[in-house]
Image (tube, rainbow, N blue to C red; front, top):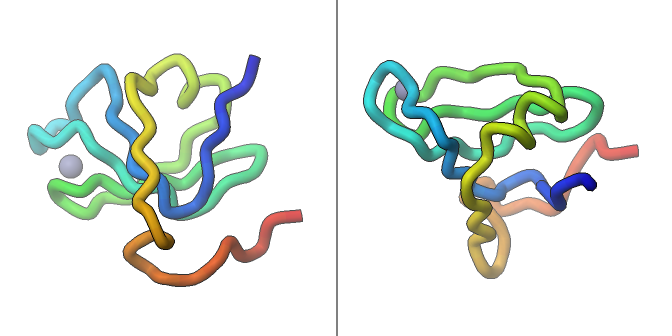
Length: 75
Ligand SMILES: [Zn+2]
């Protein structure tokens, strides 16, 4: 089973980042995901299996993400 996670989605994880935030924005998808902490802006690479284990909730902003564009670099 794999989650449908796309660039621009906001993920709520089960565990807080050390800065106290537990929401992360998806920057890049693929074999590994790059997510950005919405609290402190730290960017983290995480493998799909690890990420899927940690996600509690996926929020998809309507009308595209904060970066505005469609998905890029996805093959
Ligand atoms: Zn943080």
